[in-house]
Amino acid sequence: MLRNREFQIFLLFLLFISGIGCTLATIFVSIVAASLVLGVSLLLIICMLLFTKWRYRELEKLSGYLQRIANGDFHLDVRDNYEGELSLLKSNIYKVTKMLSEQGSVLQEDKEKLTNAISDISHQLKTPLTSMMVMADLLRDEHLDDKKRGEFTRNIQLQLERMEWLVSSLLKLSKIDAGTIFFKKEKIPVHALIERAVEPLLVPIDIKMQQLSIAGEEQATFTGDFNWTVEALINIIKNCVEHTEEEGKITISFSENALYTEITISDNGKGIPKEELPYIFKRFYKGRNASDDTVGIGLAMAHSIITGQQGDIEVKSEPNVGTTFQIKFYKRVI
Figure 1 (tube, rainbow, N blue to C red):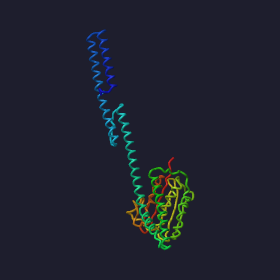
Figure 2: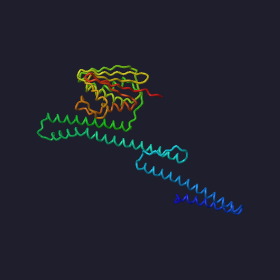
Figure 3: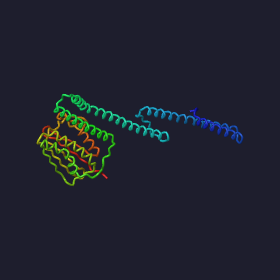
Figure 4: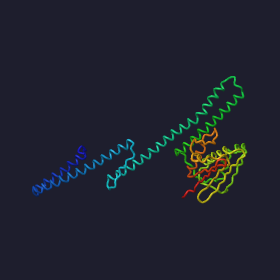
């Protein structure tokens, strides 16, 4: 405290004022009055010293808190229930600490997401890359017949297409997780949305001779992003197509009420065991009924897209009876 230059100047100023007061009291009053002035001055200076020492201790504590915060300890609570400048400063330090803690948590989550994304991509690409390397080596054989050469070439093409879809899907999921995708808020007619989502799946449905039924209110609409919602529906309907036997039935219905717009997608396929239902929207989860070609990313992407638009998706299923996906887009309160 005494090493502080500003405090030294202030103390000298107080002593100078006290000296002048004692001198004036001696000249114009008496020595007794001068002694009284000197005593009162010294008492005030001592009180000031004690008060300043206390403030310096508090500031030293705050300095220690700030050092601990700088070292990553964000669990400090320096607030008190008193009024005054120091209490206000403590409150502001606590607010900054909470803000830094939240930012640190967000950065840590981002790092974990990035690490997981890289791990997921490398894991999922390992199998097709290995397969293509083996087939590429076989294609170098000059004695390989044209039939086998054509088969290997087609397999490599299929693996490349699968890798392209996988990387594209993972990038989309990463963007959604990172919050870098901003969904549009436009009025979407549900019947047009479903027509667009069903279009790329008509061939697989026709190959499996499945019956597709679409019914709903022509005027039903909701507010959201058309292209991203189409992406979500394609993944859900594709899941139903893959897990429904030949000549099975897929039903899509939609309606609108005062609270939300609902889209229901059902099938009469294999169904999902009850113990697997809590995990079907998790990334890379593959149930017992999943095919070998299934990656386990489609439903995870659909869930992220729908919930990212303040929607909700639920699934009900019974083995050997079928599965129903209920999607709700709630009305926005203005």
